[in-house]
Amino acid sequence: MNDLLILEIEQGRWVARVANTDIEYAFRYLVEEPQLSSLCVQSLAMAMQSGRQQVINSIAGNGIFDLPPGTQPQTVVAELFDATAALRYEEATIFVAQAVLADELEEAGIALLAAVP
Image 1 (cartoon, rainbow, N blue to C red):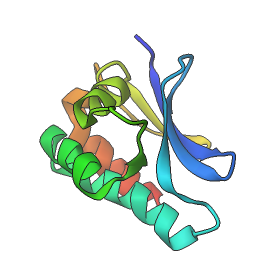
Image 2 (image 1 turned 180 degrees about the vertical axis):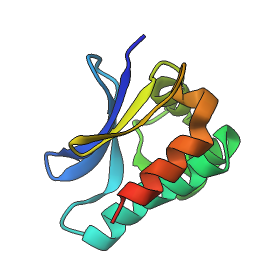
Image 3 (image 1 turned 120 degrees about the vertical axis):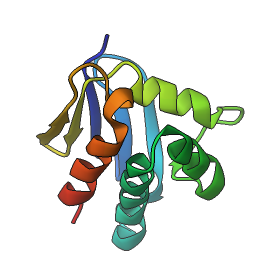
Image 4 (image 1 turned 135 degrees about the horizontal axis):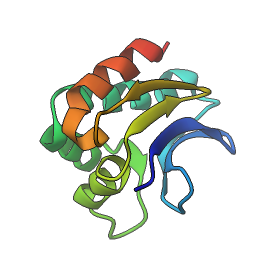
């Protein structure tokens, strides 16, 4: 299991990536669009608070991430939350699950929303 889901700025945009893997999804807007880029992170946090299906719906519906063609929202959610146990926002670990983030998605979403300015 890869323990850490990292949300950070990389090459001018927010990304969600799983530590020690090639799994990485860029958020839709560039950091130069600060209101929009932080809105995507907030949207993810709010969807997390409502559970797995809402995260899937949000990725599919409002396009939180710039997904490669053919990538299914269910795959994104599985890759980001099913094999990670901790959530890092920028430089701080803001949430640690007892097993995996998928099992405590709502609580992780609350922690993320509290961390996003």
